[in-house]
Image (cartoon, rainbow, N blue to C red; front, side, top):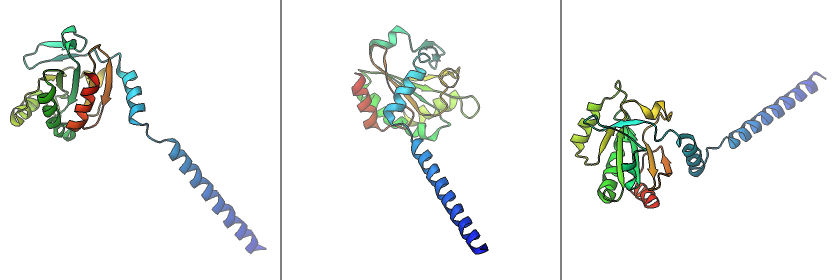
Length: 187
């Protein structure tokens, strides 16, 4: 009798464990990451109203906003990067290549989002000088990317068409080919 009781208990326990594992598997499947297109659509919706709000500066301290009319004579590539982010620094070569190829047709705004602690404006200037980059560099002195748009991961790139329409957003390192493809879509 006692043996039957333990056998039933073992079966019940085994069935319970299997059921729990199946539930976890189903939950994991349901939590799949969104596709790039789904993420991008949601991200554009989330940041659209903030994109033009921030104030950015050139090396001489002159300010501008992304909504300034003069910027939209051409499509825009707005690339946020930081020297404290090795992946965003590594990706700058691809943007230099794209700038050399499309710089006459597309406005490039390479915005350094220094935090003043882990990295500084001087760190960015030194890197640009050392690497010999020729693309235009601007600075997010007020930390608009983090405060207004709540973005904390670098790199972060916006592709804006001629009609002020935010077409694409990426939050990963891009290759020169990927940048070219996205630029072709906003030209």
